[in-house]
Structures are given as structure tokens and as C-alpha cells.
Amino acid sequence: MNTFLAFYQNIGPALTLWVAGTFLLAGTVKGVIGLGLPTVAMGLLGLAMLPTQAAALLIIPSMVTNLWQLAFGGHLSDLLKRLWPMLLMIFLGTGLGTQWLGMGGGHGAVRALGAALLVYALSGLCLPTFKVKPETERWLGPVCGLITGIITSATGVFVIPAVPYLQAMGLNRNQLVQALGLSFSVSTLALAAGLLWRGTLGAGEINASLLAMVPALLGMWLGQVVRQRISAAVFKRVFFVGMALLGGHLLVGG
Image (cartoon, rainbow, N blue to C red; front, side, top):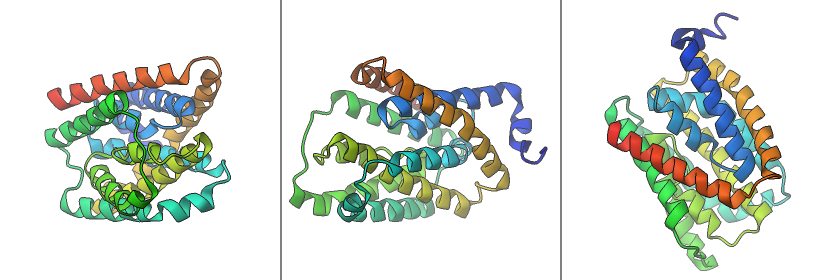
């Protein structure tokens, strides 16, 4: 048991509570709007620890919640046929980025994380609605996948530009939720592979990530309850404003 809890014993009770609160909030956000767990987790944990440590902690909560999201909807086969070029390039982009860039441990990595959060938030707040034509998907999907993978390897954030691209594909709500789960699952696996290759995802980090899954799942359940009581559109706008402020803080103060 001591070995299982070693990571949290090393970081102390205050930071342990910060981790638990972060994943509770991140899970709640995901429960309400269907995305945001790794984004919130990386942003808030990035205030207190290195991005590589934060990324290692989110692997299992992200994987489990995304598989949960992916399991429902009934469109998996069609989405795989349509999205496989983008998904393949996410994996390859993350691998190439891990080899060339990697997630550093200094101020540059924190600023890169802040920049990614800020760009994502501003795209959510300001980017006009647009549609991707089917013939455009053939080349734009792989390009978005490659860029997403490279950004993932450098920051642990895997929403840019994958999320705006998926939202522009004209999918219905159930298809979009399942497509996001599929994209995030592939990104999480690719990120985990990159962390393993760099030696920053060992048994201690996996155990810590496994424990972080508990508040994440509780938060996701709470988010699904909250979703029935508030406007998801208003909540999403508040989420993007919060991410913009957090990203700006990390970018300037990192």
C-alpha cells in the first residue's frame, strides 16, 4: 500500500488535495460539456508541478473517461472509417514530437502549456462556425491530426486543432461526442507511449494516475447531474473564459 501511495506521500497532503480537487473539477467539466478533462487537469496541475508530472497523472483518468464516452453512440464503425487518417497522424505526430521536442521541465514547457490553453480558449470563444466539406477532409484531417499530435507531445493538451476540426465536420451531437472520445483516446494512448519512451511514466506515476481516476469519475457523474440543471452553452462559455485566464497566467508567469 505504501508503494501504491508513494507519489502522494512524496508530494504531501496539500498538493494531494490539489490533485484530487483538480480531477474532481476536470471530471465535472467533462460530464457537463463532453470534453475538457485533460485541458483542465493540465492547466491547474501546471500551476503546481511540472507538465510531465501532470501529463503522467492524467493518463488513466483521461483514458477511462474517454472510453466511457466512446462506448455509447452507435457510430464507432462509421467514425473510424471517416477519421482514421486523422487518428493515425495524431499518433505519428505525437511520436515525432516526442522525439524532436518532448515535454520539457522548465519555464518554456509551462509557457507552451499556457499558450496552448489560451489558443484553445480563444478559438472556443471567438472562432466563427464553419463547415468542412467532405472533399476537404481528405487532406485537412491528416494535417489537423499531425499538428494535434505535435502539440500534445509538447504540452499534454490534445484539443488543438482536433476539436474545432471535429466540430466543423457536420456531425450530430451523438456522433460528435463519440468522435471526441475517439480522438481523445488515441491522443491519450499516444501521450502515454511518449511518456514511457522518455522514462517519465513508471509504476509510481501509473499508481498515482489510477488513484486520480476516483475523483475524475465522481466529477464526471456530478457533471452529468449538473448538465440537467444548467445551460450547457453558458457553462461552456464560462469554461473557455476560465481556460483563457489560466492559459494567460501560465504564459506570462511560467
